[in-house]
Image (cartoon, rainbow, N blue to C red; front, top):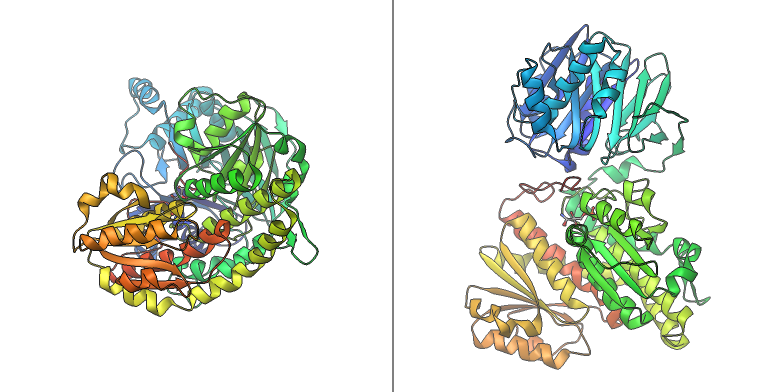
Length: 612
Ligand code: M6R
C-alpha cells in the first residue's frame, strides 16, 4: 500500500524518482524518502507528502544515476522521519524500499538482535534489510544472492528494491503479493509499483511475477530468477497509457476530473461491446468461458469497499436479468471462513486496482475449490487480472483520486453488459427488452452529461448541509447499493459520519436519529417502489429531517415535500445506479471541499489496500 520507484541508467535519478513518487502518491502519503548511489549512499526521508521531501532535499546533494524512492502508508510504526523508507542495513551500505508486510518480522528481529543487530525504526522493513545484510555478511554473497537467501526466510508480502553501495552498477528488485513493474528504456531501467511513473520514458515493461527477483545492471543486463534459483525468461509487454490521463488538466482535483470523465469512461467501457442498432452485445472475456458461466449454479462476487457496492448492484442485475443466484461477499470475510464453493460456481472478483490483498486472497481460496474465476478490473496487468481464468477490463483509465468514482460506474457498466448478455442468451429476457436495454445503455453517457451540468445546483445544496455531523442515505432496490456508496463517499472524503440503508429499514432503527439537524439523502427514482419511497420521505419529514431527494425528471410528489431535489434523467430501472450515483459523488465532493478537506488524499486512506 505504499508506492515505490527506482531508476538505473545514465540520467540524474533524483528528478525521475521525485516525479515518479508524485505519480504514486495516491498509494500512500504519510511520509516519503529517497536513496541515491553517488559514491556514498545518500538518503533523505521526511514525514508528510512527497512535496515536503522535495523541499527538504532541494538544496542538498542529489546527484547520482542510481536511486530509489518510497511514499508510505504506515503499517508498522507511526508516520515519522525515522519510520519512513528507505531503511538502511546496520553498516549503512545497503538500503531498501518496501511495499507490503513482513509478517514474521518479530521472530526474525529477535534472531537478528541475538546476532548483534540494532534497529532504529519500528518497521518490519528494517528487519528485512538487516536480514539481507546478515545473509551477505555470513556467506560473503553478492547482493542479489543475499536478497534471494533472505527472502526464503520471509513470510508475507513484498515488492522491494535494494541498493548496495559496494555494487554501484546494479539494482535488485523482487516481489511477492505486491506489484512491481520494470520499464525498459534505452540504456536505462525504471521500476515502480505501477506503470504511471514509467510512461513518459518507455512503453515496454515487464511485470515481475510473485517470488521473482530481478537483477538489473547499468550495462543493460537484466536477469530474472525465482526465489528457488531458477532462471526465468523475461516477458516484455507494451503498455498503452497516455500521460494526460495521469494529470489533473484544468480540474482542481483528480476526483473532480474523474467524476467529469464518466461520460467518456463509460463510453470506453462499452466500446466494441454493444450495438443496439445491430442488436448485439459481447463481452470478450465472457465469451471465452460462456458455457461454464451460463451453466453456473451460482455467482459469488468478491470485492471490498466501493467495488463491493458495485458487486451488490451486480447481484440485482444477474438475478433479475439472467436469473442466476448471486452472493456478494466482502473478500476479507470470504477468505477467512470456510465457504462452500464448488466447481459449478463462478467467482467474480471486482477491483479497481486489481491489487487488493483481501480480494486476491479470496480468489486463491476459490481457486483451490476449482471454481471459475472471472476478474472485472481496471488496472491493466494487475495481480488480479493475472490470476483469473478470464475477465474483462473496465477501461476507466487511471483512477488517482482515492475515492473511487469512475471505476464504480465502469464496474457497474461492465456487470450490466454481462447480465444483459447472459439474460438474452439464456432466454430470461425477451428480445424487445434486450434491445431496449441496449439502446438505453448507449444513452447513459449523454444522460450523465446532463447531470454533470447541474453541478452548480448540487454545490448550492452542499453548502446547506456541509456542517452536518451525520447523514443518512436511503434507497430501494437498485438504489440501495447506491445509498451505501453515497454514504461511503461522504465519509471518506469529508469525515462526516454517514450510513446507507434500504429505505424501508429506516423504521427499524435509524429513524431514531432523525431530527432537524440530520440530512437524509433519499434516492427516489425507482418506478417500482415510488409510492413506498414517497412514504419514507414523509416519515422523515414528520420528524423534521432535512430531505435531499434524487428524483426522476418531472417528479411532482416527492419534489413537493423534499427540502431540496436533484432531478436526473429517467432510464430503465436496472440502469438507474449509473445515473443516481453521479449527484451523490458531486455532493460529497463539494461538501468535502467546503470543509477544507483534501479530496484526493483523504486522511488515513490509500488508493489500493495491498495489506490485510
Ligand atoms: O482497488 P479495489 O477496487 O479493489 O479497492 C477496493 C476498496 O479499497 C476501494 O473501493 C475503497 O473503498 C475506495 N476508497 C472507495 O472510494
